[in-house]
Image (cartoon, rainbow, N blue to C red):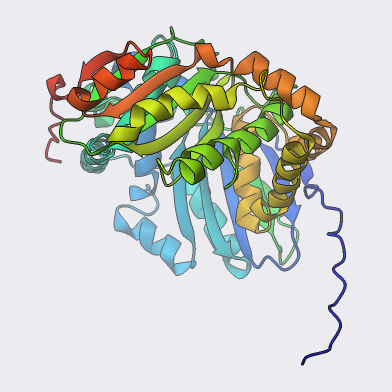
Length: 456
């Protein structure tokens, strides 16, 4: 087909987040309906105002066990019959808990929504939460924690979080609970937590997809009778940073190390969020970002290094992460602060434009499916944000300038104030790190108590 002219490429059409139909049931349950033509698999989810901070300090992990056992049987569908009922609908079930709240949802063909939505309600209102199911899920969770912390990257992430967030706050500890507290959680604890915290107050039901008919009546019939007079209102923490630390977690025999350099920063409520996101992408989000251009392409120290901001409901932290071979660790750690020093080398118009183009372009892809919309809305709700935040963020991206992104980065990421976590062989790494000016405290992971997993 030689000689044919290249077709013209039209600019992408304007995009904005879909607009919902909103209403509130008499019991206080907020509802958002997103009609998305062509999305024949409907996502139905409920965002509960049940954050991890609601857990008793000596029973941390109980919230995750409630979420994990919701689908293990109900009064109407005991035991495996509940899973069988979900499967007969062609539905997929998932429940997760985060520091901001709890999310439970199903994906189901539109023709079976009337069967699946009552099952979602049933699991929330009348779960069995039997001792045997709690014990089994507890054992599984303990094994997953042990596996996670056995990896260098998992250990680095856990130590960083416990270091950078003040230890008084739930956000400083593992999402699934610390093994010591998780082991103590009983079936009685799980049932009591459900009774105290699961209810319509503060909850939001989200439906997204190509509805075969208006689902409002189905929602009212399914959830309108949900009440819980004993429901306790949630209390959301506002974490504060811990002291700056330079930690080397000993992993004898490792031939490479996982590195985290981070600072406590901001959340999505902060007006500087768009500037920080664009700066983080320019510094360590793109393949040829500043960090990758030097540490990967020029020096060959790593397969990749990234800069990301992890927002909590309130506050957050920005992290540079990467894995480096042992002989490169000290120089990489010494090089990173200089690459983040935007006072010496301000962000350029091209860097900001490239970051803006990427962030604006990826948003429609994130919300291209019913599941993307439903999960996105639930995540925003549990962060204390409304869906209109997506369009406000797009507008904020358009306003970011090289000067504003540079100024915000200098305010939030001063290189001299970065915390450091390195997971690797201390016998090999401590000396070179010290020679580069990093007086690290060595943490002996081998001294920790083993994570024995009780039998269910």
